[in-house]
Image (cartoon, rainbow, N blue to C red; front, side):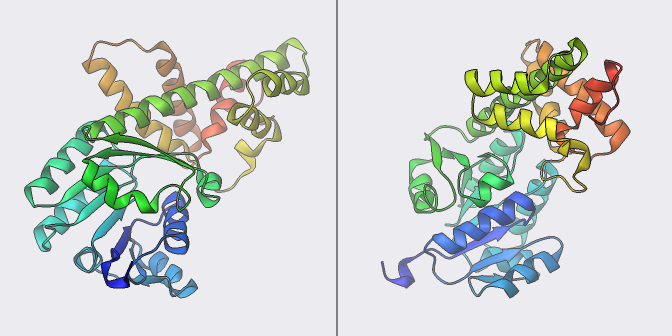
Length: 308
């Protein structure tokens, strides 16, 4: 395809996972010129641009949007997404542009932003990510795409083999469906971590070796669960000075899911337990504590020290 026919792409938000996915898009995707990068803390964007000519940093948000055709967002929360999109729709013409939102947001936020952009002649794809930073670096994450088939087709060349291992496509479905799947999917993941933590504490209290439990998990439920149990046993949950997955992420998602459950009359006992432990870690260890630090919280409730 001639270079002038290729899309110009920008990336807004360079947190841990955002930067990893952005790098892969620039390094393995085919775009018209460098990927334009913007971050609230401009130095992150400047540092990335200094690494490679595949990136061009801008300090002004509207410059990032006005100069590109596809705008990717990976922002910290609903408020950040709303603020960024409110700014760009007010200060620049977004007609004909495609916004691909990798942020984890409430389904109501996704629906509202899709409606806002549509009213300005732009398109919105909800594209939450399953998988942490290490998987993102290796292009092994799974993403979800919900929105119009036309919009999905525009972004499809940047998905499998470029930024991710696989894509769950929800063509012509409301964008909120992707956000719902993200929250429910992570509820399953967080619940699995909760059970692994409880089983590990129970094993220790009953005098069964941790290696025995690891052998069972690896034999019967291999994959992420086995890796997470190994991480618990390694003590990384209290040793890492700056975890890749902070507890604040789980607190935010638990709040979104609790809101949806309560509004729809669903009682989620497991979510209540997970929320209790994530809130406890936040209160005692701060919002930047490791997500797996709920293991330490469960240990303390069972008469064991926080550190293993």
